[in-house]
Image 1: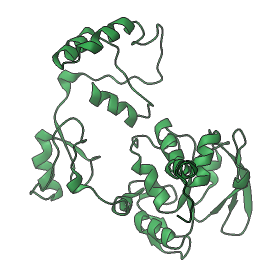
Image 2: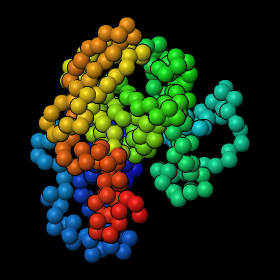
Image 3: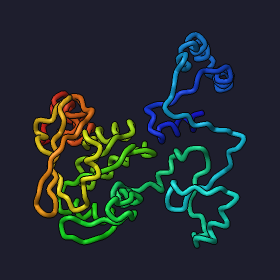
Image 4: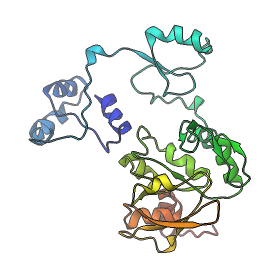
Length: 297
């Protein structure tokens, strides 16, 4: 159940929960937590979907039909049925020596030995995204010098030049990206905003916590007007406040400029995150007076 609830976040759900059942009471008994059982039994009438509840999307999982998969190599997004893995290894010339692996329903083990620094993780930023201009994955043009290369190197070049940048994305931006590092990566590489037709709620929340700006096109057709060589300016961020759109100016290669409005769902607190650089920075700033610290300290 925990694994399936974790999958809910991957589809964009803020949270997932199973209705309370007597099998859960038996589990609490077996795990020496009987003291919780009475509390759950008392409130079980609330621990279920409301009568007549409807859902935008329903995913059916037949556990009797599920088969074991192996994810990898190199990325957890590459899933292959275990029964076909040998054939895929030979077909794709994958390494036959397994150096590290995790077995289970969720890879949440404390394998700190294999963790990477954020700089290394960021080398995969947007690596699988398809460029709308050329219909190719991981192919982009660096605006500063006109060179063409893959996005990780592109992002690193913009970071080194202290050049802020934005992403123009289609609908349902962030689907499958519940992990917080997906928001950490563009922030590290000096990204300032992700502009999309709409976001999954989890990804939008993660971007806010990292001091990024998740913005949506007020007019969805404006997404089609943005081109790879455009220079985008977000105007008036010093007056950024709840309920007021952000102005975007787009300068074309020929020097002409068109403008549009971008919506957002920010209230006062995440705006404070943005101004501080992240939620963590904001909390640190709030704690400084209590600790008697100053920036010079």
